[in-house]
Image (cartoon, rainbow over all chains, first blue to last red; front, side, top):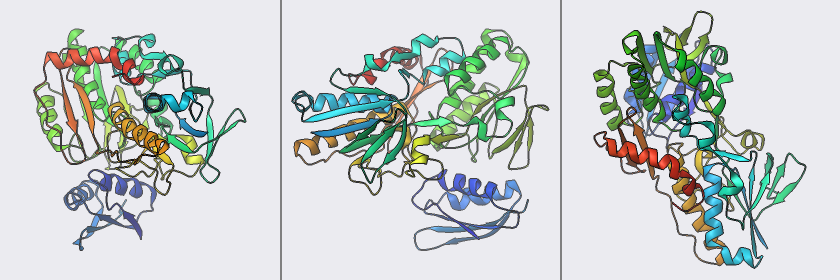
Length: 73
Length: 380
């Protein structure tokens, strides 16, 4: 699993960080994005759906969101 | 004698240097302080002018100026490429073999486009984010009469966040002026789920695109260009054909930052968002595009940051408390064609609010294009 800690970064920081990471990892890899920006909890799942990857989990932690995705292609 | 070294001869470097010269005039004259600026080129390029050069509205000579002419005579200028910044020894190594020791360092090394990092882009695309690219696009546009033009933002961050919007509006008008707008399809693409990072700007621009019959696609992240088939392939699995591709290529920080281990993965220097000190260093400041801050990579940001850095370094040298802080202030003109413009102003806490595009702001922008050299000289 690859962790993208984008806490403290604002839109579109976390989404762009996640996209950059996704380009680099193998198919089947799990990516966990940590973001303190609320809009990430909406934008990232929306992108994952459009790009055809799997959204594993969106979870609100204390003061940030944990968004887990799996690269499918 | 205290030594201040500024690496970078772009807008951030020259403004900081000139402000320091003003604030430390006496100290420099009495040889208690020296300020040296290192630039790897003799001329400064007014980069916002490239947008106009692509449409043949300004010429190369209008947007280039000898750096020596921009600098206060008390400043020392070294034309050389910095090859390594050694923060342990407080030393900047140059490609001439010379090394400069510093008490205070200002990193103003900027950003650069790396079209070569997008497979097929160099062969299959255009850009206006450097002089050669803008000149090549100018010649292409002058001959283009029919087909599909794709304006594609290939990564964030990039210099001048609003320039892709401006070039799109200007293309619409350029083709109208030449009587071929009906023969030309315009498509704008952006990596995230709206057409600009800031929501307020995005809404208005989207409406203006629709009024002008300009197409747009979002969540559009190119991964390669096929120059033979003239197709953009995206991470989202799309294949977008084009006749003319105007890209905003991926950007990176300067090579010296990467080679010195001072940057993140893309070469941006981790920087304190208020003090503008490089994280972990008390005597190293970062101004302009070189920072990793979530602010626009734009000349106005460099200008406002330079004020803070020069004030604090001068204060420390004079034994005063360095209390100036940067609050994310930025100001951008937005051309909405060749006759009207609007502008946005924002900071860390204040989102931008657009005013209705009008002639007056456009004239202000054209005037500022000429007045800019006074800004570089620290006078405006």
